[in-house]
Figure 1 (cartoon, rainbow, N blue to C red):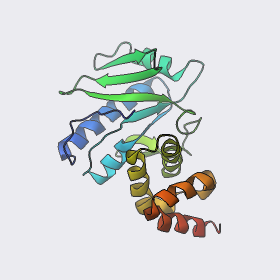
Figure 2: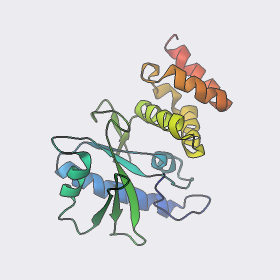
Figure 3: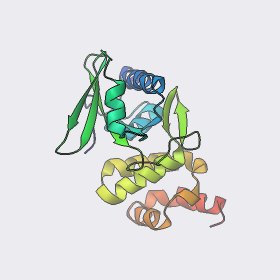
Length: 203
């Protein structure tokens, strides 16, 4: 279920983009201070780089350590006055709310491996405007997996946007041919960038 961190106008206002980036930067700083590997994911990336589109899904992937990702986040935020967490045991979901801004901004925490790669390192994480995100390859891989499971238009839209603009950054060896062929069959606009990726890798 996508997390809706912002109001729902048809396009993003610049100040909304800045609010989301501020939230992500503040949360990232807290996790870094506790040496917790993490990366943002979801429609947030497309909203940030396009500066036009509504952010309908803001999530942060957190690596498990000796403790589960949820516990690591809750412990890291225990003394923070700006963040609060809500854990739903029935659905096993953890949401974080940044209360420094009005209205507040909510996003979801996802354990690494369940979404995205198991390890969040310099090979799987990149920075955009100072905020850590999954690399383009890992973003496409995770979004494609979500689309296969959920068949949401949101996932399809994000995949099409990223493939069209950043196909040259996608490592074909990390992407499931079977899943991508299904996606291309149902979303023909993805055919040209996927073909270009395959040509680049002589596939």
